[in-house]
Amino acid sequence: MFKGTPSHPAGEFDRFLEAKGAIVNAATWKDYTFYYVTLPSGENNEYLKEAIELHGDMMINSIIPEEEIGPAFDIKNP
Image 1 (cartoon, helix red, strand yellow):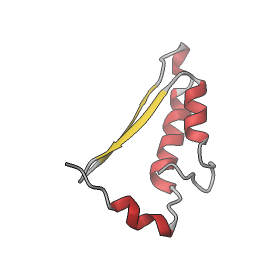
Image 2 (cartoon, rainbow, N blue to C red):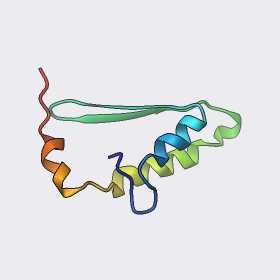
Image 3 (cartoon, rainbow, N blue to C red):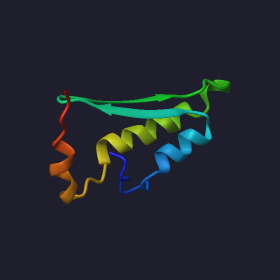
Image 4 (cartoon, rainbow, N blue to C red):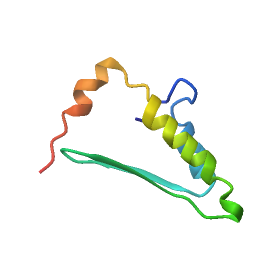
């Protein structure tokens, strides 16, 4: 999910949000993965729209190299 998209290179999502004071993280379990962003509210939620657009692009258009598909799904949790 963090390898970039056709319109946003790898790392752009985190760089943009962290520059705005956000905390970005994710966790994977056997049957689900969750992603979260904690973004300072700021005046008029000025970064919220762009954060949602970047996150949506990452979820829908992620570049996932073929050679990483197998290992990405081989998750072992207790």
